Length: 156
Image 1 (cartoon, rainbow, N blue to C red):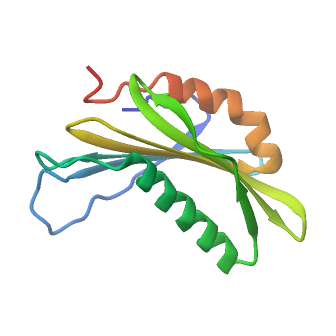
Image 2: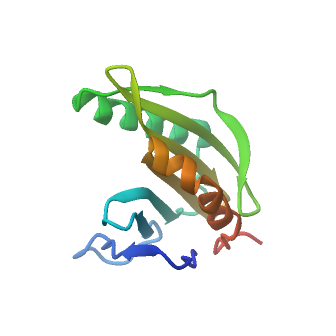
């Protein structure tokens, strides 16, 4: 799914263990780009879910739930978030929807996060990339190149 460029530390994300392999099996990939001191500048995560036959994904609803989850989690930590209007985009060749959220603390911009959701008849994907205000700005172009290089399993 993702071939990570040099400088990204790939984290192993376990799938749900103890459960038999089902059509809804998920594959998750996550990587972190750190600065020279080991502090995270940006985190990217891609999740792929195989759909059960006949299931249609409500992509706008998925993106809304992703956004709400992010906003609630940040609010619990005392942070405020504002997300841009949802816009159409692509994930590989699959039509997608995305939004970018700005997270602030006491009025100071501390994080930026982009959320993307896409689905075909067989698969659904979510992509998230986030970083500190400076880290996101400094690594946004590289994150976009990684995103553009995606070859999704079901993208024919």
